Image 1 (cartoon, rainbow, N blue to C red):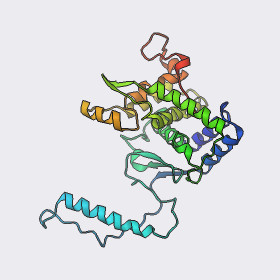
Image 2 (image 1 turned 90 degrees about the vertical axis):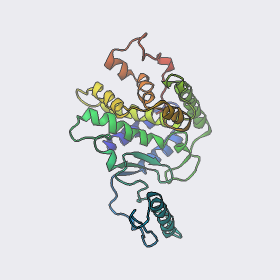
Image 3 (image 1 turned 30 degrees about the vertical axis):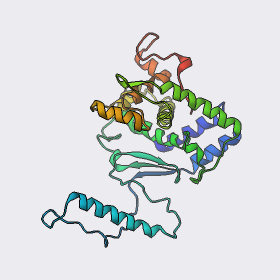
Image 4 (image 1 turned 120 degrees about the vertical axis):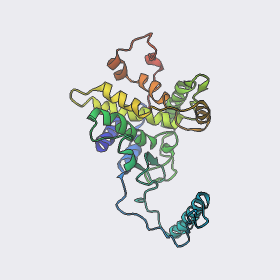
Length: 294
């Protein structure tokens, strides 16, 4: 799945009408050199525990003191990196973490084992469409971070380098501004609205991930689009309370959960075709107001 999506991303970059060939080549080079980490690392770095002392309640310890001891041991362990070259094969997340990520300075995508299980983004018992709708969009999301407003400032080696022509950079900024304006003001709950500028990188990544998945879907026989869309929606189902939403709305780079569904889907023709949505329906967005970058 990941290999197919990388190939589609390569094709989509080559087909962009707003990017010059010079910038396209740099973008494709970054894509081709991107590292992919799935599941768990082959080797684990040895951590020195000599400086760490954990005590039970019976021995006079506490949870707070034990956490502080672990943090201090981690800090001391970082000294082993001094004078050594960066090891790009090292994982920055524990494999049991239920998450996926893109690291700009490594130019790599990590899909943790914890994310590859229920209630994460993958199940061996799910249909292809369901796994593509959850895990596939998430993978495409992380790939897209290499080319969002932040990731696009780094080259294929993870160095801060401007690899854009001036004209392409201006065209990219114009499209990003449209994404900002589109998502700005969408409400997760009454009077809890999204900040389009704050959430730009993550919204761009969601748009990119869904675009790549829909391109892949179009190449499959008898693809069930409803299963794919609803799998992504299911990934973001949750129950929370208003103060938490209020805090997240002003501090989180991600749009809040329902926005990642309700604001995302109306940008794609396949959504309208799948559910028969027409002008006047609640999730209708006029074609000229829909946004796309990659």
